[in-house]
Image 1 (cartoon, rainbow, N blue to C red):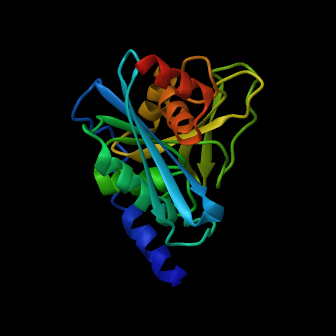
Image 2: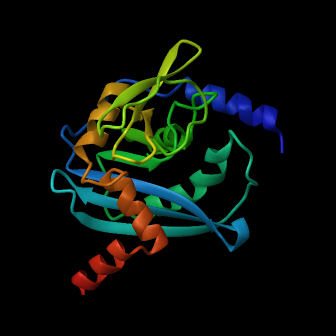
Length: 223
């Protein structure tokens, strides 16, 4: 695998990322959440995408795609491994969202192209990265209070908001994916919080992907 070529591709794609608000529907009527995992020892990539109404944050649709994994795990190049399954799930949706939350980094990546930016570019939809771990950059310590935040910076560039979304929980890294500004990314994540560590779009995507109790209860209600 030619990592030098992939690195060049990342840098080229990163230059195309729009870091300003370019919403076609504002406020959005539908917000999607996307989550990627791996099954069968990594041989299968599983992507779940959910659609939630806004502002009610009611789950209205979900799709799960499983595709053969085409690339090994290489730190810094995860988006190349994850996007084929995301695209497959995206194509299965009966309607497309106005805003997309991806469980992963946007521009808060060493080459400014995490999976939220990569996939946002591919489908050309306003996209926000909501990651659980830092990939690069530095930030000042956060207070323990929910809602406390600091900027993540790398080489003098602001890349994400580090947000304490819930007390006694590790912070989230909220970044521009594509067609969303950094401050808007934070604002939309805050609007989609419902008392959990994760915002509702990625929380539901994780619940669907992993068959968590919240999802099985929802399925039972739907009959």
